[in-house]
Length: 172
Image 1 (tube, one colour):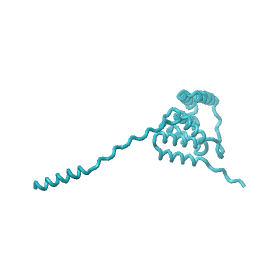
Image 2 (spheres, one colour):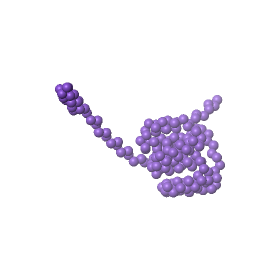
Image 3 (cartoon, helix red, strand yellow):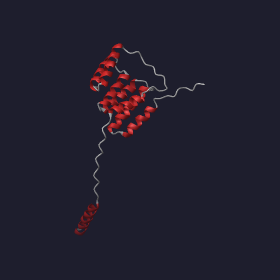
Image 4 (tube, one colour):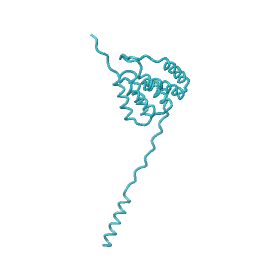
């Protein structure tokens, strides 16, 4: 019995010596700092007028004044202040998909990736599922996911944006 115990211990020690430790995991390479101006430019380019017909509702004059103020603040790179002005506009027209998308783009400028994605999703849910705004929604979602490291989910979002364009009917 003693020989058997000694043999088992020796084999266990031998096997333990042969075991390899997993290689230390390399730290993920630090992502290059995103050029937020380029990201927002790509989002807005995705929403450029396509071949589809887009209907724009009449805007409240009060909201239009706030839009102009937000544009000036954004041009001056005061993204937080521009966002606060858009919050005032959203208090007048709650859930406006265009304003929500603009908020999402300002969140991209501030590197608030989760907020940008959440606002773009809300804009998509409330807005048209086709056209320029739809493409901007999915481009924002894709860029926000890319910046968070969710590359596969970002690719899905970018592909989803392609479905926002509908070819016009063939005219004979």
